[in-house]
Length: 303
Length: 257
Ligand SMILES: Cc1cc2nc3c(=O)[nH]c(=O)nc-3n(C[C@H](O)[C@H](O)[C@H](O)COP(=O)(O)OP(=O)(O)OC[C@H]3O[C@@H](n4cnc5c(N)ncnc54)[C@H](O)[C@@H]3O)c2cc1C
Ligand SMILES: Cc1cc2nc3c(=O)[nH]c(=O)nc-3n(C[C@H](O)[C@H](O)[C@H](O)COP(=O)(O)O)c2cc1C
Ligand code: FES
Image (spheres, each protein chain N blue to C red):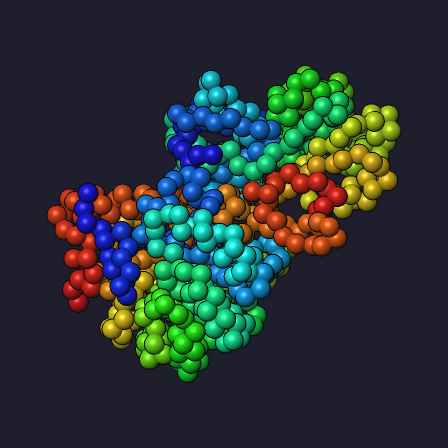
């Protein structure tokens, strides 16, 4: 067994693999396939203050080596999550990250208060969801609003729970967004969320998604995500969680070389239910074979 | 439920663009009729989603799972080219499946096009029922599995859109002509989504439960990603359910069309 432990803002992860928000629900469905305590962490489905039904179907289109989704933050609401799912999740030996999204700054702050009081390990601020009309991306698209929402939410968190700000790739300058999050008091940034995209059906001459637009994820976004993670690692001093198109241990190593301390695996969980578990096993073998510990890789890119 | 490797044992053309594939696994599971399997498309890194197909037949002893599929796009086209011995990954059994109880003595199976496949396994799960089957196809050339359905059905009615075999018209037309004679205790149905609205309207005049197996684009297939939603009405309120986990079988009364 290699040493796969990483530390992010004082929180220890047994390995750097975190299930990405929206692809893992609250973990229950995956727990029927493998022991989710094997994961470094789980970022919950994006939570909103009130229950949300999300967008009409169809919500997914497949594109070359990727998918475009327009779920639109369907979730039972933060209170229902705390009441029905959080205790179950806590029984597992993995880091629990509450991913929150709001329509207003007040929403974000209320939710941050609620989840910190209920006791999660970290909070991930989703200011980058391309699939909801109000809020979401509106907070994440310029440096001024990123800084102010980060600062406001940071104030609402109790118990010293670290705040991750999840950045949108749909911006002019990702490093400016990262700097703004850091200036607002973020303890960590995660990136990337999905890239704005659409799909067209030539037979019906209609968009495939009922919502017209969706967010692109999967292997096709990895090169974009790698570049953005690398840019951010040069722009900020807070740790980075790399996200985007990771399907195998090699991808994880690429992100860590570019400066990520940990990674999130999203779409790969949908392609293969046990993908995250396999990535952990393969990372373990890689570190054993090369006689290194995982932290040796971080930021090791030779440019 | 498991995610496991399958070896292709047989992959043969039944007619036109419809194929039958027998898969073998070292990890066989119990399957309820109407449940489905989500399978990967081997050697296609561009197609990252698994494809859902009804489990037509499964034999735990022989460790086999049989699906029938129609070639409609890139994934099913690649599947149709697989040879015996090739390996793919599958997640199964998924979804709720069709459930019958003692009060359901006469069962009417109503299937159109590829919708006939999920209905095929009902008889195997519930061999003691009296089955009447109405199957609809585009034309004579696209009729498949009629012999197999005939074997367990007390009566099999075929309709084709162009009248080249059986009655001309849709399965809903045939249902209207025959329902009062058949007097089913329950109707199990799967077909093109456009037929559910007229079916629901017509069946509102009857006190016969109708269960339909819905199709929606899927990703995880296990209920986690929420991309496969369909609208249902419960207690007068409309909300979304997951076709992969809460379905694919729903009471037609609840399906919002
Ligand atoms: C529960 C369930 C059971 C099914 N059982 C059968 C069966 O027994 N036999 C059979 O031939 N077909 C069945 N289908 C439909 C089958 O899944 C699609 O025909 C197949 O996914 C098409 O893949 P493709 O790559 O060839 O098509 P493409 O159009 O290239 O696929 C693009 C994407 O859309 C999805 N998609 C396209 N059509 C459908 C559809 N009708 N339903 C759901 N997703 C779709 C694909 O999975 C893929 O993600 C079933 C669908 C569901 C949801
Ligand atoms: C179906 C689906 C739902 C998602 N829902 C959320 C969400 O609720 N909140 C969020 O922050 N990100 C959400 N995401 C984005 C992912 O967490 C991740 O940032 C993105 O998919 C890129 O990583 P990947 O290529 O590994 O999937 C979702 C992605 C998918 C595919
Ligand atoms: S396909 Fe993921 S929830 Fe149904």
